[in-house]
Image (cartoon, rainbow, N blue to C red):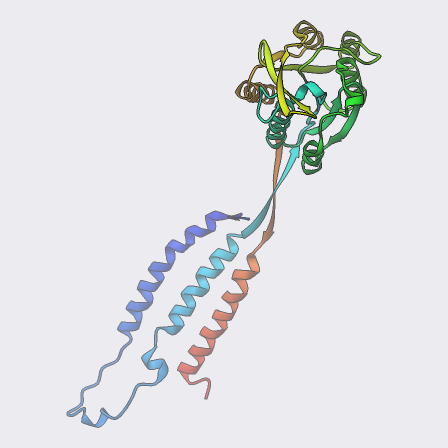
Amino acid sequence: MTFRFAQPLFLLFLLVIPLLIWRAIKLGLRSEGSMKFSAVSLFSTLHPSFLAKYWYLPVVFRMFTIALLIFAFARPQAGIREEEILTEGIDILIVLDNSGSMKAEDFKPNRLGAAKERVKKFIEGRKNDRIGLVAFAAKSYTRCPLTLDYYILEDFLDRMDFTPQEDDGTAIGMGLATAVKRIRESKAKSKVLVLLTDGRNNRGQIDPMTAADLASTSNVRVYTIGVGTKGEAPYPVVDPRFGKRYIMLPEEIQEDVLMEIAEKTGGLYFRATDKNALAEIFSKIDAMEKTKMEMKVSVNYRELFTFFFYPAVLLFIFEVFLLSWKSGGIQ
């Protein structure tokens, strides 16, 4: 809510009111009569009338009347501020590897858990951008289409788990192709994929470079992230005889392929060897893919003239009534 006077120059007339008050007081004191009496004891039981005692009330009403009229003619206005956001936004698809190798615990609680945690923080930092989720292992599928409902998106992300053993594998090309197919028809000014994996392409009918060509011709920018420590990482296995134990899983990230995908589509490749590095990577992507916000601000004003004018009229009527009473016009 905003407030203003459309004709503020009228407020300068308020400076006249102190002069009018001074003049009224001076005239009131000068008008007091005097008469000599030999004794005033006879008047001790007499009490002055209400108007004689409060002779200044008509003056007070008159001053308030003038002040209210000045405020009224200055055209007070109350306005409601309206903001209209003008932006085309960015469409972003997270392409997340949920194959069995993402169980490796070089990240806590594991690679997939750390990735989901970081993706969620990335989502929470966005505004006015549609974001979706594609998961891939041996097969790829859309977990959540592009949406502005981040609560639903985060719910799908929370419920995402490792792929069943019969569907295990890493089909980078298929995951990328599914995401491109989902986003290519978007009308957004910027279309972005963030692909995160810890393995090499070993499944699927589409190889990564073919999917990268499809992304390039569709004006889709791809940021690729290789997740995993250099060398070996602890991988949990459940032994029916000895229970849970760990084996060391060798590094299998195809960095050259991920670099080429990013380069061909105008994106960048990042390597995350721990959770801090992963957080920094998503922060960089977040900073590079910011929506340019334009805001149109308008204020709708309504006139408040009557809120000052009608009280001024009432005070004027009271003043006339008091003056008539004082002069004996009202019995």
